[in-house]
Amino acid sequence: AQTVTQSQPEMSVQEAETVTLSCTYDTSESDYYLFWYKQPPSRQMILVIRQEAYKQQNATENRFSVNFQKAAKSFSLKISDSQLGDAAMYFCAYTEGNKLVFGAGTILRVKS
Amino acid sequence: GAVVSQHPSRVICKSGTSVKIECRSLDFQATTMFWYRQFPKKSLMLMATSNEGSKATYEQGVEKDKFLINHASLTLSTLTVTSAHPEDSSFYICSASGLALYNEQFFGPGTRLTVL
View 1 (cartoon, one colour):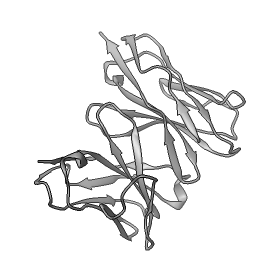
View 2 (cartoon, chains in turn cyan, red):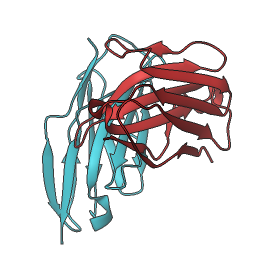
View 3 (cartoon, helix red, strand yellow):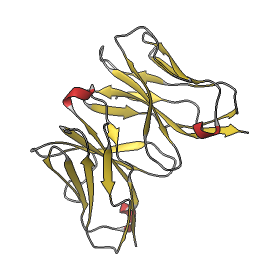
View 4 (cartoon, one colour):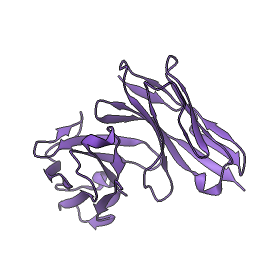
């Protein structure tokens, strides 16, 4: 079965510090997309960042960047200069055909 | 762009009644819509995938007679929970994707269903 593993159920970071959320996945596909979604207490799913598997360059989006290691099937998310508004549940996902396969999520707490 | 709405945002119903949840793509044509169920502090569980004009494809273990999905137009999909019971209480999220959107799914704000 295709799976996504987020090994950190919860993480904490001090405001203005940097935190990295880990994600590994298992797919037999060669062409796919990877995503990080944020779900704040409102429960609205918000796209944080997207990576095309055929691109070697790591995606960045302002304070958010990824470390994509295709051979290792690893896709970690780095949040720099953490802000209180970053507190949320973060889900890693990849595309399987037109579906998304989600990890179990990591709860990120930001301390002031 | 790429906004998806859901209605209602929350609904309370009595056991045995049916509830309909609407999912609309407001500014794009959604060739495919997805319905998810989410329990507190858990991940999203895909229930079914629907393509406009065709029958929905349900994930294993999802009762298609209980969770009726209709995708009659490129901007609207509905999920009807029939003969709802307390165990159907959950948070239901829809998402939509279109041909020009790289398989990216855009999510609605969710509907909290409580069955008494």
